[in-house]
Image 1 (cartoon, rainbow, N blue to C red):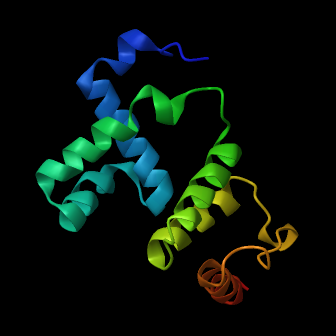
Image 2 (image 1 turned 90 degrees about the vertical axis):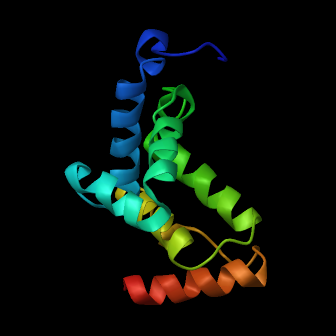
Amino acid sequence: MNEIVDGDRTSDPAHRRDRGIEAYARIFDVPEKDMPAAMARRVGQVFAEEVFLAAGGPAWFHPALADRERSMLIIAALAAQGVAGERLDRHVRLAQRNGICLDTYRFDSLDPFFRISARSRLRIAL
């Protein structure tokens, strides 16, 4: 499954940018029309454009993964890197919107750093 999906459209920078904006709008839970300005405020205009182009590529939108599974993988990758706080919380909220019920997951087997973040987040969510 390494073939490029939607190859003619993913090579078009305008289409990739639009898909990247769509992806980040879901992550940040903001309207797509507001995402370019919001991202530019966070990381600067030049890096924001690079981020949108990267997120709009075939890896993010490949049909081999549904949004639910993609969310699980992103959370696992962030946790493995020791990422916590708002960055992790954004992806956890997106995962919940993608159908993941956190009550069914046990955090006891994860490292203490992530467990504390996850439990704090669950208290806030409830």
